[in-house]
Image (cartoon, rainbow, N blue to C red; front, top):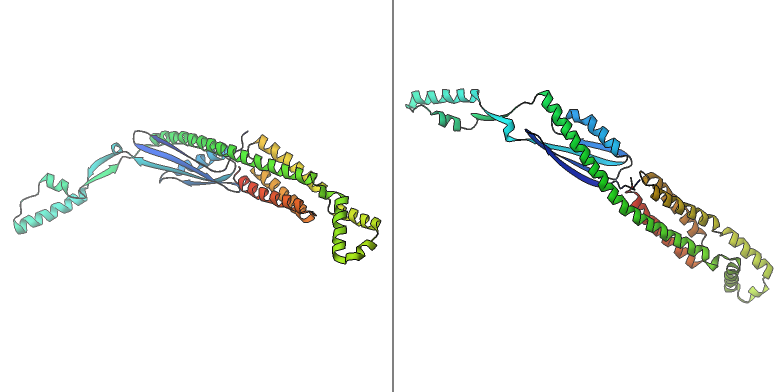
Length: 296
């Protein structure tokens, strides 16, 4: 399966003889799957099937599903507002009796605001059911487009995360090859530190004792376990990227483990080059975390 992002957008338009509509589906990052609906008045019957269709195709993200529809002019008819017409006729009759005004014409009455009204024709249940079936079919197309968009974005994220994993592996290799990790190198730094602190008296220190102290310091600062765990996490990350699908939560856990080992490596580092590699590793891990938070 492909790696999928949690961000995307899709729109699908549809219509029948009386109504035009369009679906818009937006997706952003989320801890779980949260589907929010914006349906027109009278669309309550669509809520359950819409949620079902979304949950069948998506496992994570904040999803907004909006249906906008408008009735065509052919779906309405013109009627006379009888109450308004009667009121106008009463006023006209009163004016004619009092002022001798001529009687109003039909054209004149019909041209007055409020006399003619546009009324939407009510649809029977069969028409509504057929329309909702078409709308749900269009929604499936929109959701499929959304999934396709999330897969495309996920592919780009997978490439970026893969590159970051490669860089972590390079930094792990640099630490492993560092000559500063050997007891001899640690002993040399220890001897230099003693000489810097006590001066001429440094020559009085026993060489065997100095070597023992260097071995002890090397043991305390040994990074082998951290490096092995980092290599294990590197392999796990590559396996997840190859597996694809809904791997966001597992990748997020791996990033936390990467960060834990990098912190330990920095705290135990006994050399400037190792510290520099550890700090760069932490920076790469932070960048990877930002990418992983977008993965479904």
